[in-house]
Amino acid sequence: SQQGEEDPQALSIQEGENATMNCSYKTSINNLQWYRQNSGRGLVHLILIRSNEREKHSGRLRVTLDTSKKSSSLLITASRAADTASYFCATDATSGTYKYIFGTGTRLKVLA
Amino acid sequence: NAGVTQTPKFQVLKTGQSMTLQCAQDMNHNSMYWYRQDPGMGLRLIYYSASEGTTDKGEVPNGYNVSRLNKREFSLRLESAAPSQTSVYFCAAGRQRGSQETQYFGPGTRLLVL
Image (cartoon, rainbow over all chains, first blue to last red; front, side, top):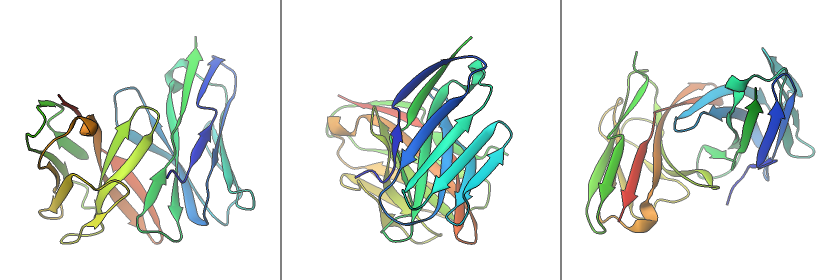
């Protein structure tokens, strides 16, 4: 079963608007990562947030983590058409038989 | 630096045929992974290798075998392909820093089993 579930499944916004996507997970984690996937390509790492961190920034990306709610959010500010992609969260479970579990992804479309 | 490379990019198989998907990394990372990606399912881990000489099952290992030939190469074999194995397969290499690991993905192999 999937550890991470992204919400919404799909999101369509206008260029310049902010995009927010959420990830919920089930078990305790060491850290949570967000990845991006352009259509037909492999995933690219965006940002990692540790379990003892609440917020992290990288350029136009802002990630928050609420371990009490087992959830994280990814905010992309001032979106561009080039941000059109699928975004996945990945959790590093503190227990379990394998390293990272990816969510089902949010498909973001930014309209020019 | 090529990063993570995968061959072939596309493959069509008939049910029952076998094939090996190749993956190589030039980043000197210890961990390597094989995932499959199906529409609406995200990525599911098939097998992983924490270091040269070790392999472990992931979430969906049935119908697959792997071989960590050396630190650079991690291959995935389908002994008798089934239509349910139609998918996009991604290989990844993991860079570890303490308890954290960042994964670097290859471009994927698109497999169609008829």
